[in-house]
Every structure is written in structure tokens, then in C-alpha cells.
Length: 373
Image 1 (cartoon, helix red, strand yellow):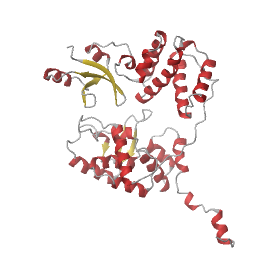
Image 2 (cartoon, one colour):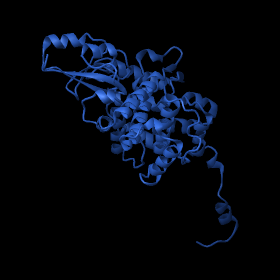
Image 3 (cartoon, helix red, strand yellow):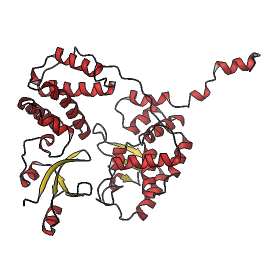
Image 4 (cartoon, one colour):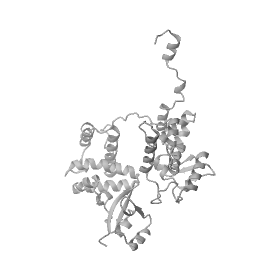
């Protein structure tokens, strides 16, 4: 028993219990029977869902959040262990409230990181006793001394707002703290020629099918890796996107061309996927997001594309090209799963549909007047 080690790790946004031990057939067969058990090639061990029941089986404390329980040498754990007893307890309450509110794993990680940045500066000062004036000075410190970007300042303010208003129930606690104005950033996209070069640079059929699917349906990479076999409805020619960003379900159109590609991929793919449309050959679970991102980067490099874009540019390209073809922006909003039409309207600034009909006054001047060159 002493040879068995336990740890808390993050796996695709979820907290998991890592169980490592020297090879033992009995133990291997036993852990395989635990629902949700997966083998990690990276950690060289099995990991199971981090539930109170599984923690008891592993003799781990059930009340502590993962960041305080993990033995991994992570910056978050190092910060958390140096906190005062009071602030460590407040961190625990903060994480519990986030969990009860069912925030997404990515939001939970972001809020946890941002809140810890304040806690590590307080030492023995109790975080619950800070006033709005204290927090205003802290945000000035973040902006002027740390020189955080507008997006980072927004994230930090959101995390603090959640703690004081959702955990401590102090309403309107942040009225006196102005939010930094975010810059208007236009979506980065690829034109049709660049897309052709990108797709042709791929030789692996599975990788090609992944990027085809993202562009064809305008998916986020997280939506692609979570697509299940049952989500492809070839009779209604629709793809079901379940619990996407904002926990919002939606349907998108299934391209007939993409359907043929997916059918060919499934016929030739070995081993054939069981649950997810694109499964890892090693774990038979959903493909890691980072792997898909790397597939895109490798293809972009091979295609000689110099633009500073990532895999999300395929979604941006999908939306912009639909606008160029005259698709109503309201339909594009629904296809992308946006809550607010203003988010979709960003694509109006990059669509060439109306811009191509605008003639510069310089052109008319050169044509109508005698100007030397």
C-alpha cells in the first residue's frame, strides 16, 4: 500500500485524482473498474474523477479544494500554502461558491488565479475586511505598477467582485471602481486562398477532418473535441452542439461535403471512435484541445502562412465568409451561438461585401484630372 501515491491534477478542465503505483496486475484491474478511470501517458498513472466518494477511497481529505490538496509543485499551490489561516479559509469559501454556481472549469481557474494574486500580498491582513478604497488602490497598483492589460484587469476585477458580492454578500461593493475600457479588436481570419493552402498542407486524414469540421460549422475548438458520434444527424443534416460556451445548446448546419468527408474518415479510422467523433488513440477519450491547436500551427507553418492566427481564426473565417456571401447576420449569430448580436457585428468590420463597392475618391481624382506620376 505504501507504494501507491495520490495527487490532484487538472485534466481537460476537470479536477482528477492521479493514482500511481508500480505495475501490479491486481491493482490495475481494480482501478480500471472505477467509473471514469483513464490512463495518463504524461503522468504515467491512472486518474479518476475527483469526487468525495473517490477521495474517501483514496484516504484524501474531502473538504479541501484541489489547489490546497495537490502535492504538485504548481505556482497556485505554492501561493496558497503561504497564506494566513484566515485567508486560506476565505479561498476555500471562494472556490466552494464558484463550484456551487457551476462556473466553467476555465472560469474557475481564471478566478482562482486572480483572487490568489491579491491574497498573497495581504499576509496577515484579513481579505474580508478590505474596503472599496483599498481595492481601488490595489487596482491602480495592478494597472500602473504591474502594467496589466485591459483584459487582465477585467478578469481580476471580476474575480474580486465575485468574492465580495457572491461570497460575502456585499452588494454594490464595486460601484466606485471604474472598469478599464477594452480595445476594439477585430477578428483575425484567413482568406480563401490561405485556407486552401492550410488544408492542403495536411496529409493526416483525421487532422484534416478536424479542421474541415471547425471551418465548415464555425465551431470553437472546445466544441470540436466534445463532439460525440450521436451529435451528427445525417437525416436532418444538423450537428448538435451541447453545452457550449455559456452552457448554451445549439444546432448548426451539416454540410453535405463535410458529411461525406466524415463518413470516409470513420470508415478508415483505426481504432474506430466509440463515443467522441475524434478520439485519442492512446486514451480513447476526447482529443486534447492543445493537440488540435498544435495541428493547426503545424499546418500553418507548412503552408507558409505568415499571419499571426490560431485555430480560432477558422471560426472567424467561417463567419466573415458567410457575410461576404450575403448571409443575414442574425442567422450567423445563431450559428455561432452568440448571446449578443453586438458580438457578431464585429465581423461587419472585416467583411469585404460592402467594401468592394466603395471607390476611393483618389481613384476618381486620378481619372478626371491630369496628375503626373
